[in-house]
Amino acid sequence: MRAAPLIAILYLINLVGCATQVSMARSTSTASKPVFRAASDGLTELESAAHAPRRDDDDKKRKERKNSGSRCGTCNNSPCTCSDQGSFTGQLALTVITSPFTVPAALIGDDYDHVTHFPDYPYADGLPGSLLINGEFKGKKQTLTGNLQTFAIPGSSDLDRFGGRLLLENSDRIGIDTETDYWLQTHRHGGPDHAWNGDFNVVYRFAESEHMQWRAGIGFNWLADQIQPEFGVNFTYGFDWFPVRPWTISSVIDCGTLGGSTLFHNRSSVGVMLGPAELFAGYDYFQLGTANFHGPVAGVGYRF
Image 1 (cartoon, one colour):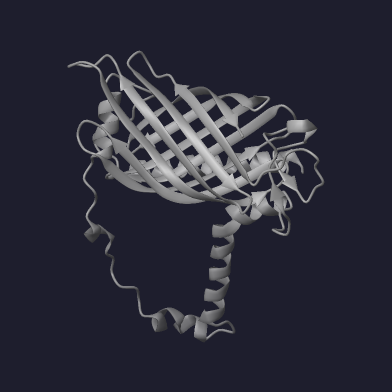
Image 2: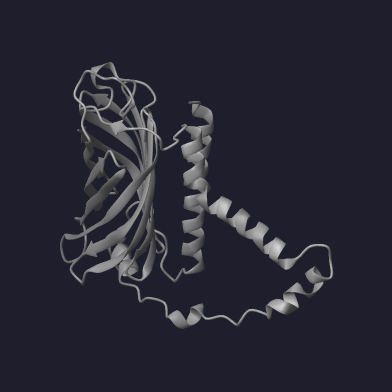
């Protein structure tokens, strides 16, 4: 497996995701100003975005499309046919839409024709990665693997974020990915304030090798504060890469809604395995509506 093409694709995916979310946020912006990591009214911005009124479905209604015959008039008088053009366009669109799933599988050589097991933890017993594929291994093999993490994302002097994440997967590529974050704002008029948010997703490991696993899934986002709970849908996409002992590289993207606003979240990190324990650090970007909070993240994990 060559690292350079994978790194380029990962960077492109993250860049496109960020650009898409920023564009969506700008198109629906209000008088609220973005928050860099955490300003004095940071939690207020988060709550205001979550509790923003949902846009009326009426604005999604458009004029009816032109009669298909009128569009095909020119085409029908030429050697081509509208059905041919529509077929080509459809195939091209399908290729673009499925490329985030087909390209990683092709790059790491996942043909879906193998039996998967897991060691006790990545790099255990001299293994080159975190997965056992059709290999003879005398050590302990299991059909379930997990990753439990706790982390902190320090803000400015008045807003900090602490969280935990649990990822469980089986040999059939099915798993759950859930996260809970606690937001604490200490310096605020009226005393400290806090809020909870998180997500719960069912994920599928669509590409896997000894060194790398890619997964995607759907679920829901939630927020609980002193006003009222809010919910939304979520799509998650991410990977874990184990290039060489003891290093780990991970990234996860969440795109969806929460209350009346769009949500985008990306956390990318580099870690070191110390037996089953993992120390990691990276960067976290969280945007809800026009309120964004981003900064360095550090934590400890336990892979089993």
